[in-house]
Image (tube, rainbow, N blue to C red; front, side, top):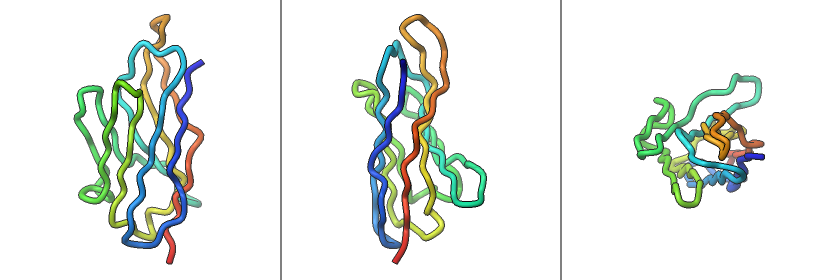
Length: 120
């Protein structure tokens, strides 16, 4: 079984920072792209940022310049550093990864989500 477990969500004031982590575990041979998505109340899930296995990152326009995605391949972990948080960043944040298992099966997996609330 392969799974992603997120951590680091919580309540934060506007303008402050928060760091999310997402660790993959299970029968993993390798991990391709990893990413973060978010879903605000009443809205569809949207892309926040992605990062390739080689470290190339891509961001949505709404977070560019404020959020930084990174990964530690040895730890099978992806991070999202969120700075200058705004009220509109409030959402459930989901981790996503493209995984090659030890039996060479490709899986796209999602974490359970972690809530980020930006409020004064």
